[in-house]
Image (cartoon, rainbow over all chains, first blue to last red; front, side, top):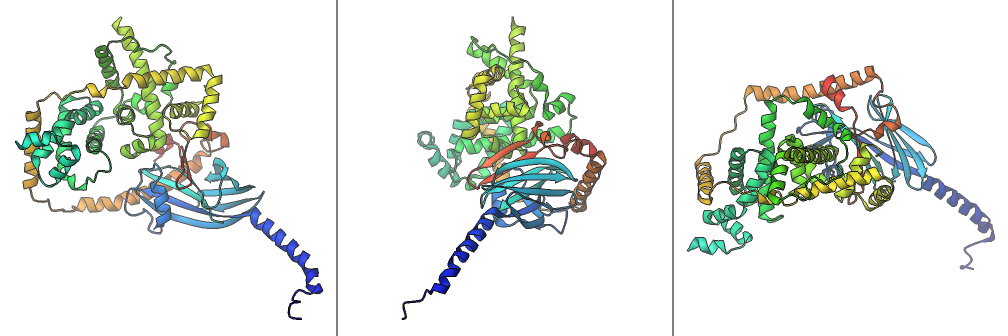
Length: 153
Length: 198
Length: 159
């Protein structure tokens, strides 16, 4: 019969498939993907470090909306990483700058920023997809350092 | 008469005519807004002479930049921004040539205002308008230009913290600290002036 | 009063610069804290005293005299040809030196901070020090946390 596509044998596998998908979904829900960037803000047209590249249009626009006085931003490092719920991932953005992101679940994260290995700030907040956290401070010669933490998945 | 025709025209029409090169129309705009532009320069600079020069320079700049004015804000607000920027440039130049006082540095780092007792009684209550103006004028004159400017931009131009930070080229936190200090210091100065007048 | 950050928050509350949730927090804090209420009263009085102050300032020159100088300047500016832009060797040298110096200062800053240890950057509680502030841009979904790191005094003296 052409209409009997689902056989009894295949039905045995159905609960297994459901269990597998449920577990997978739970894992997906518990894991977030984050992008971190280390930037420098300056009013000069070029970055002091030729290796730095200008930030992308999207980031530039976001930064323009913030009450910051710098006209140009240059990227030193960009890293993508995953963080499982209840766990932390620490990434090095430069010799002196590291961040640690802890996935607290329910779209909440705890971001710890370290300068020279010492904790500078702990920020706990919701970080749903598309949300951005910008940490920053003044640097010499009227420049600024900025760490951008963005949830991408 | 051309002049009387312009005197009854709205700012928008005058701006359009000025953009076509009609200097008579521009003169009418100057006449209408001259007190406001001068007042802004004076509150920041605290010198009549400098305020007159800078406000006139602002009008010249305004004329040169008229093509860039598309009515995003009122003409008066646009001109006010020009004169504020000129005053801040001037003060920055002057600052380069003088050493900062210890007090100014301490003010910027914050903290002094925290030791000031809270002024419970309103020191301006019951004052005549003229007397009140004199006291405020005196007290404003005793603030550093950074503190006075933040206060002026916030109280007289209704700028938000974010906008002040942009205009002054500093962080929003600096704006908040300076505004807080300026207000607390002004309150204390008004109390002192009240005591002195007794 | 709690700390300087709370004082600034109180001021932001007065100026209508706080998001609703934070404004509610401040309102309930005010209900319990007399010192904070007193400070708010002082800030309000100062703000009130300034209302209309600048409207009383008048230009101390006649319309004609004031305008004549503006007119002369406009005419002289319009008559002048645009100045030719010439870049001096000093300006060129400065263009090279400024970024190079900035880079050197960043490196030096790092070195000094390492030498001094984490006095300013040790614990989470160091964030409560004056100078750290948060700004929220609701349109772009961005939170900005501006930190006093490296400390201003280190910036001023160490570089």
